[in-house]
Length: 405
Image 1: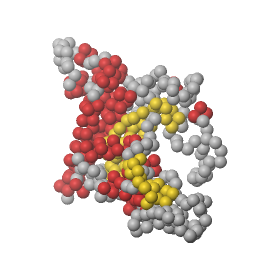
Image 2 (image 1 turned 120 degrees about the horizontal axis):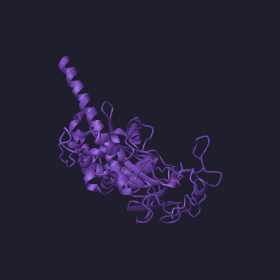
Image 3 (image 1 turned 30 degrees about the vertical axis):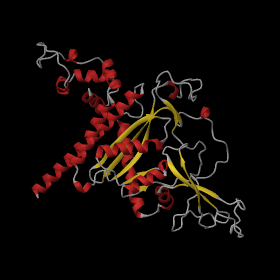
Image 4 (image 1 turned 60 degrees about the vertical axis):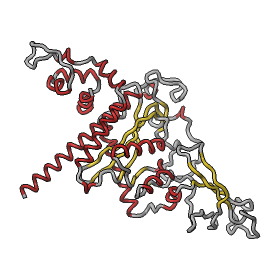
């Protein structure tokens, strides 16, 4: 069944009926794929192809009921094959990139030509797909015409007035990819969730999958600003590298003194006031520290704020995670050559997403989460198998050139 599904994806067949028709025309593939053959003397190849193949409905049923462990096993096998095939100097998986790709559900609510009441009401589940969720593809609902980042001067559009291109029902596929300038791009991990999940929710499960598939941690990573979080920097710092992530503009950057204390707007080191564990409104439970104005804590002094800050005379207070990743986030040199070179790694996910788009990942003709998740995994299996074939061809050409020389 998996081999037949890969054939369907590879040839761009739009339905299970077209897949079955293709297999009927290719008896050798039916035998090669391992379908139970029904013997028949009426055919020179010795079996009845029509009776040996399941119905299109059964093909769909198997896609829906295929165990995730089986699909994950197949994908992991492609990663291990690539790791074994690529030369050691490629440093396979040392530098990675992570991104998500939206998947539009096959429902009337996503058709702008269809008249649907309360199209963007998340409490009204589409009848065509009981698993999909409403999400937003664009974070900013008030565009700036000159492309600059600034505070909005008008109220944002409500979802009821937005277009389907911004809000829609569906899913998203997150991937971790790596690349080599000579051999191309490869997928190391993949995860499909409903579209109401945040981008940051993909990071930890995907990195755990990378470690499982590779047997080691990647050293450095390139991610977009949606992943500008302390635990991302901490992960790659602990792995011996760093994360190239743009600043997300969630508040001003902090400066720190030699002892790691944050500096206030006036340049004064703010002493530690208290610590607590943040458990709510966060994906990762972590310790936070609260720092106070040095002119009022631990005791008020006779000095006045050098810049007469708006919070004076009460004094400023700031709260920051105690993780070393937080300080790295604020102090990272995003103009250095090392950062710029690593950030180029992000083109790997863009090219993988482009290949997945050609294989039909964006608009699957499926109506449930399980089928879409399994098909996404098989899409990435096919992408890695194509990459494996490319690697072997390039190695063979190199060996031939060396032999001739």
